[in-house]
Image 1 (tube, rainbow, N blue to C red):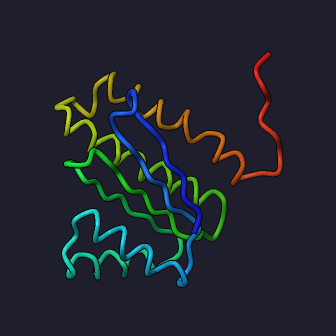
Image 2: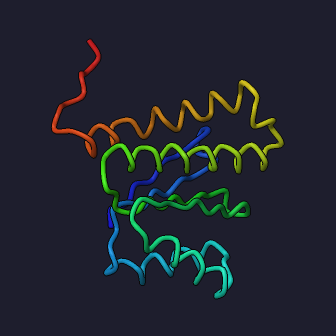
Image 3: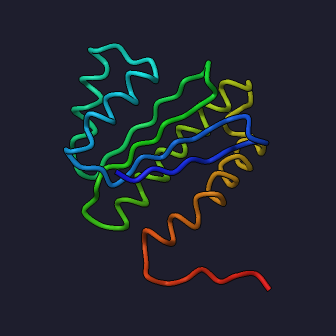
Length: 136
């Protein structure tokens, strides 16, 4: 399983992205989702979803101001990216809910853009063998 951590909003909110995992990672995933506050029953249901290809899930611990994104192995780069965008949308909704920001507002759109900006190098690295162009 690969993991990345992102600080969002002047390091107020953390995002842990866990991706490209396989069945050998399920003990670690179980530990994460239980630490995020899921009951055994809900954790079992989450594990059922997360054990499939082309799927993902977002869990948020509002008390810790932390979101956990899971992106399974995928059948294609397009599916992986689609799942990532879907789960980022949930993170934006959760952060917006926490700060009482309209999720359809411009600040929420900027938040989504900031998350995307921070994840961009990972997406490029994951998707292709190309190198990102460095700013002049």
